[in-house]
Length: 311
Ligand code: DIR
Ligand code: MN
Ligand code: MN
Ligand code: MN
Image: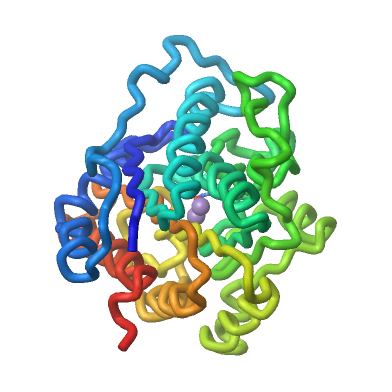
């Protein structure tokens, strides 16, 4: 199968440096080689990490409380185009982040391609400790990595093309096709957005209550069959025991096996069209071993989503 790879060295959706080095660490540990040689995918894209230097604004003042809004908008506009171009060729698209703001680009790109190529709306499975659905007005932090679902679904919008106004209707995610797994640190304003919009969410409470097998079964049943699936996996969905080297770790998360299981089950549907693996920040762990463990966990998730572990 053909796999489009987009390696995004971007960190300005949040304040901590180093998450832009995530894709390089994943690739250096051999991820793309394994995908090519052991899993047999044909890779498209040059495998180089993009830094989008030409798109970094020299002056980027806050807009509606958002930090680095011009740069984050411009970089995501480019990512959206890159993902769209792979997806419209029928390639499965793998995006390595970078902070989770990059999903504004990935989700809008795959939503547009699925409408054009398959005449379908995508479903989005968002695996994360956080809901990332703040609008600029309700966000406490102003960090755009806490807003990607709002922008990708049209819950947040802006008329100005320089501030995400480039997101047109044919690029939008239908919130009825969104399902969360792993939530445990959701802001009050986000809880209200989830309630008001009837958004399907499985928190860690549900994982404990039903077990990961039934949670994924319910999530996939909610999406329905014959729907292209975009999987956006924030490595902080995993417990810090497995993925300590990330910007906003939250205890009480998924085990590595539970994360891998989600990826395996989504692969098994045969409907996967795009995968994001984000928020691996090799510079944040207390020990070098912690950074290495996080990279290994990220690689494991991606390989599972590509079918490695299924017999
Ligand atoms: C918080 C933290 N909800 C915010 N969000 C994220 O800044 O909006 N941390 N995404 O990873
Ligand atoms: Mn998160
Ligand atoms: Mn929070
Ligand atoms: Mn996230």
